Length: 155
Image 1 (cartoon, rainbow, N blue to C red):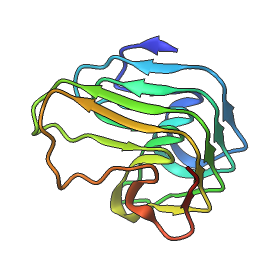
Image 2: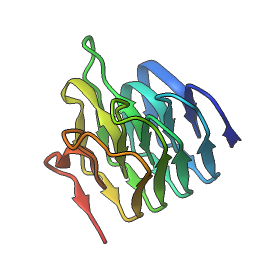
Image 3: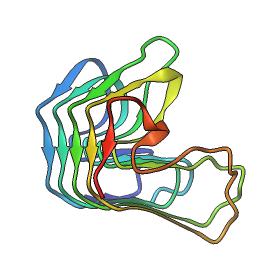
Image 4: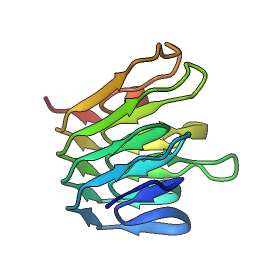
């Protein structure tokens, strides 16, 4: 899927209420959104639990939060769980923007707000971040965002 959308996911752009279970993405996701988009292999904006989902294809974006499974998870009203999910593909953000724009990149989740839980997730894909701008070093990012307990990274 190629395009320029505020929320782009291989299964859904946004999910609230209920759960996303046993889904797989096998198609390229490339979002060319200009400002703070959400891009993911499974669900871009996730306000529900994501269980046993797998991403097998590259996910890339030009700004915002990018995750091979979930781009952004949680709200002040609901703290979701992302559990038993795997990623074996590359997640990449190529960003030419000001340092004030937040950027989150992760193999399982790009941004977990309000203490969303990552449990028993595995990322074996590469996490890449390219930029011509200097990032705010306080923004956490990595193969499995925030390194929550129960998650592991396989190189």
